[in-house]
Length: 156
Image 1 (cartoon, one colour):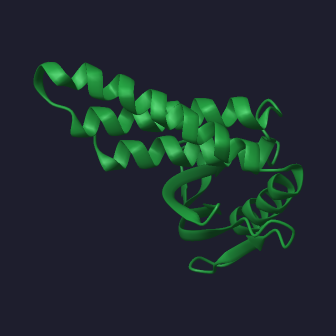
Image 2 (spheres, helix red, strand yellow; image 1 turned 90 degrees about the vertical axis):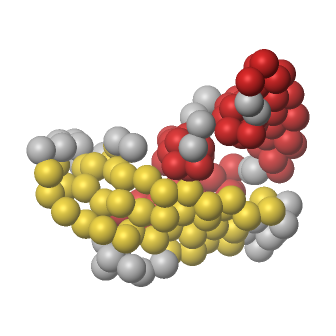
């Protein structure tokens, strides 16, 4: 598994949290995200007959860590991240950083559109994203396209 694939997963998962709040269960969502990322990391570092064990260990550890991060994200974090994502995708020029920060807990993040174009999928933007929770910053990259109803959909 490559870092690019891990980044895609992180983008989809984090943007899902930011744009729609997923299922509203912070711990459950964090556990699933962490387990997925941990499993991907285990696949990237494992080899041969030990690869399955690395994937399982990575998924377990990632699930635990993700649960704790998900537990730490609150509704205000989601609202702030959502507003920043919407502003970054909809209104700011390419290269402009849109930041959010929750003053109550110090959680923060950024969205930066890095390329804007039209394709058969419609009006699209590639972007970079960061999320900082508990002093740990994760970075991701992705692409979202505007749907006919005006909503943004993650396409990669």
